[in-house]
Length: 184
Image 1 (tube, helix red, strand yellow):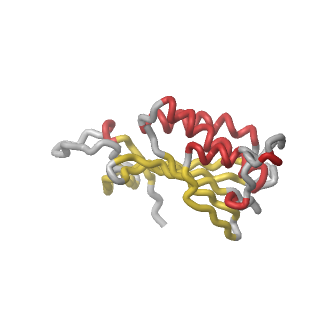
Image 2 (spheres, rainbow, N blue to C red):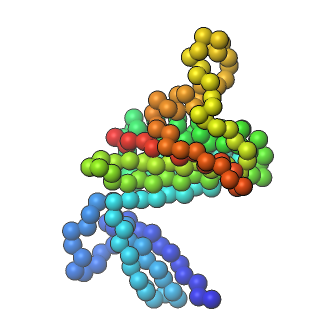
C-alpha cells in the first residue's frame, strides 16, 4: 500500500507560475509521494479544522490556544473570538461533564468549518462526545422564577445568545451538537 503525505498550505505561501487571481480563503492541498509532487487540488471558500481532546477540564487551555490560532488565521475579530470561546468552551465542558461523565479515557471531537454562505460568512461548529449526553431541547428555561436561584443550568441558555443550535443527534458513538455562528 502506498503512503501519502497530505500537506495543507495557505495559498499565499505557494508560488506557482501561471496561477494568478487566487480567491481569498483558498488553500492548496498537495499529495506527496516519496519527495515528488503528484497532484494539487484547489479548494475555495472554506477552511475546516478538527481538534480531538481528551475528556478532561485540563484540556481547556489547549482548546483556547487552538481557537486563538484559528481565529487569527481566519481573520475573526477579537469580539467574535470572545463569543466563540464562550460557546465552544461551554459545549466542551458539557461534553466532558454530561456526555463523557468526566471519564478521562474518553474523547471530545471538535470540528469547525468556515464557509461563505449567502453573501456572508458562517462558522459551523460540531462538538461530539462519546457518552450518553443530554438533549438540549429538553433543558428547562433558567429564567423561570423557580429556577433563578439554581447554581447551574444556564450554559446552553447563554450559548443560544451567541450561536444557533442547528441540531443534535446521538448514535452508538455518542452525542453530536451542531452550532452555527456568524463571524464578524
